[in-house]
Length: 301
Image (cartoon, rainbow, N blue to C red; front, top):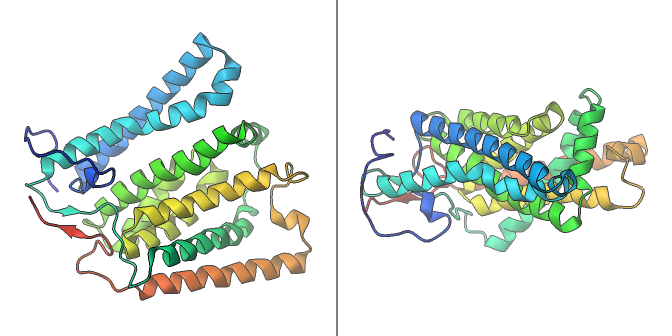
């Protein structure tokens, strides 16, 4: 996709569906760069808003409610840019649906169950890798506790709703979909997963996020479904919230700490089989023509 249509003035009919608003923004390298830069600008804006909450209200208010306020703000500049670019490109550039349903003949509810099982399995399979990382710093532990131990509705809204929606929109719906038009699918998935890891901002979240991002990227590539990856992301994050709220589990970092070694190994192997089975199912989904896998190609208007 060329950059010349990003800011041209072209009137067209409105598009009011949440996902289809971005169907004609399939960014090339310049579009991806603009998207990332505007996301970074949104992060800076979020930092300013957080500081304003601390200054004008209180540190306690900012700590408790700040995340649910600033999380959407971080993505607003990139989303406005992508929406405007899509509106201007429609009629000039080919489009690919940001959310499709290439399920290989399976029902939506069946796919939802499959990917939910994959998300749960992935969380357990990745844990041994997380155990190899250096011990988390006290500052990072405090930050994680603050994120997970706030009012439950704030935590769930931030971690289980906002994070899956906005991060999947950016990392899979925009970045991966755009990269699929430029590089081989395997590299598009790897690069988008690496970006997904980087935006988490710390080693202890970035490494697991990168691995999970590979799984999410493959599911998106095969199905074209942003709803499925959002569901997987939600299941993974909600698991962390639920575990952190179980009495006696507050200080448990890994499941290995509460299980015998043999039981833990068997559980990890069992979940590895579940994850592998899900990936085999994804692999069996017939691919459409072109590098964009399961994303539906759209006609120019």
